[in-house]
Amino acid sequence: MSAGLGRFLIRRFVTAGIFVLVVSSSALVLARLAPGDAATDLLLSRANATTIAQTRARLQLDRPIVWQLGAWLNGLAHLDLGRSSLFDRPVADLLRERAARTATLAFAALAIATGLALPVGVLTGSRPRGAFARIVTPVSLALVACPPLLGALGLLWLALATRWLPAGPGSLAVPVLALALPIAAAIERLQSQATAEALAAPDLTAAAARGVPAARVLWIHAARQSLRPVLGIFGIVIGSLFSGSLAVEFVTSWPGLGRLTYEAIVGRDVFLVAGCALAGGVLIAFGNIVADVVRAIADPRVAETW
Image (spheres, rainbow, N blue to C red):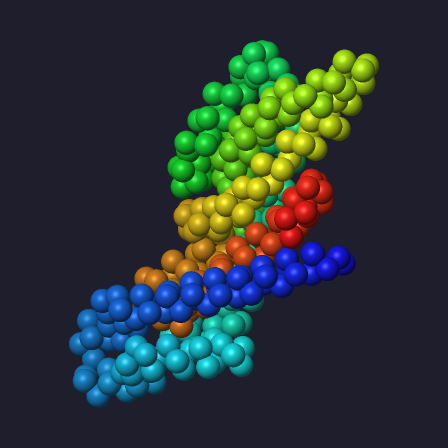
């Protein structure tokens, strides 16, 4: 590992740590400030005041927000994220189960989107007025404009109507495609533009004039040069994966982090809300770091900025 890469990784991990800490702490404070708490259902069921007071004391809801935040940060330093009032289980155990499922969903969606979008983007960028580009471009624009929730509902209807896709609880096909297709369309549009710009660059024009085969110019030189702007947005792509997964997991009954976040918010589970925000922040920060390292490998000029 070079000294520049080492310094870069240290800076990114420190920044990621601050980002995760701010996101999770803010989630806890906002969940605590929201109307109602985990004892509200007892009040609605007309439980006696003593039972409600005991429940709020057990869940530390009778403490000031500042005290609760300090206690949670102290527990975080010892890898103790508290106990879920909704599931009556340690938050850390719930997060390990659900975050692994969301990571599986996100990785599969990202792999499909990248594997599909990059070669298609190279083809449409090399011949923007060709028949293939005329078909792909409107489809990509429609998918980019399609919200993940609407895409998930459409794919779910298609799966149930045609039986082309498995749609049972726990099936991966529908949620993966609902997340992957809009991301693939966005990457394809960016890759197409970047490829067209790379092919118009003086060095590739000179390479073509020297007799370098057109396929090599396109798939080796132009494809590599065009990867830099595409990989630069992968941090945003990873963020959109986890934000879009909430709606997709809820609609498709995928038991991941997005669905757990929804259940925690509805159940007014303060510690679980903070834990979900923590897990989501960690996954997003890690994805951003990996995207930066891959971008530097694809384009050595990026490493000079480290």
